[in-house]
Length: 546
Image (cartoon, rainbow, N blue to C red; front, top):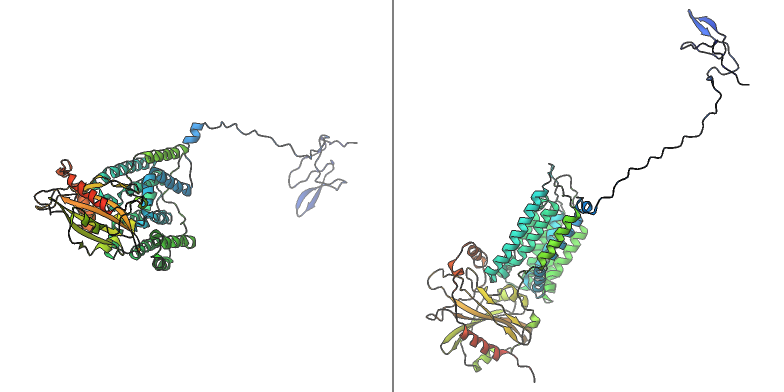
């Protein structure tokens, strides 16, 4: 039977009194104070009073299922234009890929020159060294950088447009000096700088100024003129390549103490490797030691720093990335200036004693004039010799540049020896098919105003060929030079090796100035020179066996 509560008899008493389920109460005196007391009952005093008979709920309540909000899938346009963070290694890869796309013809022609044994083979390692320096640069800064994405876009566009356009326009004016400077690579550097600003931000690009400074140090004339002053041998240029690599290692590890050990060790080992390989293939001797030690240094010592704040890498959308890639492909498809050199395999073979064979022609050959500086620019076993030729009333001078390294002729080409400001103008390039010379190059200083009375005015024909010697193939650049002044047929330019003044300063000054001769060049009738050229080639060329 269910016991019901007696509501009329129950008292609800608050502390210090206690209530009971029975109606009986008594007062207990103690301590001078009255206290309400209740006799013990059969039930616990703390048991709550059930007012209604009900089943106790012991099972947990079911959880409420909340449906997630319905989110609309973003449109394709929004997905393409949504800016997002891109890992730095992806941005670096993007810079490299777009650079290759935009300057592919230039890079291919440069690789061709290096493969032919040019002393400037170090240019193949310069991008790797510069990238190492940039990636190990701590771009952290105490102050937080604001986003300059709009400025970055404008700055990148200006640099790429102005530099690449100017490069293509200037190369046509500086002729031989452009090849000596490797000025076609300016467009490559401009593209890398522009895309770096666009993808990493102008502040981050500015903070890797050490890498940009290293690229300026690698200006090819500095390298070539230094090697020329030190003797111009394969060992000298290999040592210079090792020296440039040691500088790159020092700058890469400049925040660590190990740089004092790695830098001299790199130079010593690379120089030793060049010494051992100096009689091997020329590109191998120049590149193999420094390339191997660069890889070893990266594997053992190079670590990218952790950036704490500072220059914030901008976010990029898929659309902007696609635009940059497409723009790079378009630029690469446009006509670009390329190094105009003929492969050594396309040169014709001539007789080793072809100069003596000229005595059997109507040409009167004078005694040889040997220039002592020949081995400094043509390498070991190389030479520079001049002969005076006379034919009826015509006088010309035959300059012969001989070398065992065909790459030397690709560095010093297009009348570089006959210093003028502006440089000699190449009116038509040389071409050869391997069995015959298809076109003789023609050049002259018709764009160069005389700096003082008596300065020579000349024009020249130029071509390349090779002959077999006991020490291997010998490559020759032939310059047949004549005066444009009929009253002074002996007054022609004398060959000289390039210097800081003739190879850098004077051409730069000529670019800044606007000479009247650039608009009114002196013309010259080269029929007599054409006839002498045909006689020389006919006497020298090896006749095919019947």
